[in-house]
Length: 163
Ligand SMILES: [Zn+2]
Image (cartoon, rainbow, N blue to C red; front, side, top):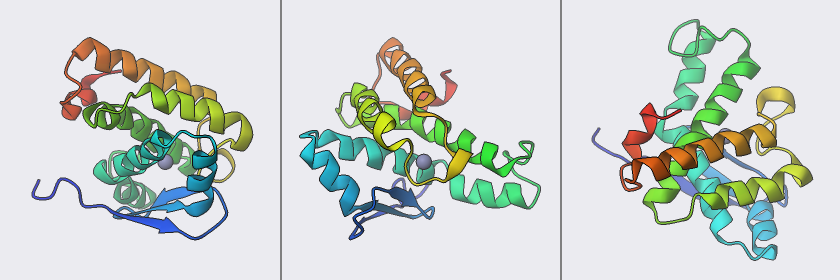
């Protein structure tokens, strides 16, 4: 891998609450950052960025495009909404390792979803493409257990073998 972080970060002007990536650029809206600031939890911006960066690092955009042409690792999952959900969970899992590696308590990801989930449901997706927030919290906690068990929060790559 020549470039580890191939992402560019953008702060959008929209009052909507959203974050998304096109596979290279990561967008977070002013509306989402403002709401997080009002909660007095600036680390939650890192939670959102770690999630989107995980999509970029895992090549999800490209994988979803391949799957829609009938090949690639996600092609076996036939429903497009289920494919997107699978990438959401994967990104949530990797984000825990990125947060830990950046010295941000990954429990912040749980705190973020406990705040965001009941109020807004999901970020950036429509309808049933995104997992329910309670499932995300469950997956994130399981991954935090993995990080703690590994005792090597600095090594994000070891996350791939874990739950
Ligand atoms: Zn996502």
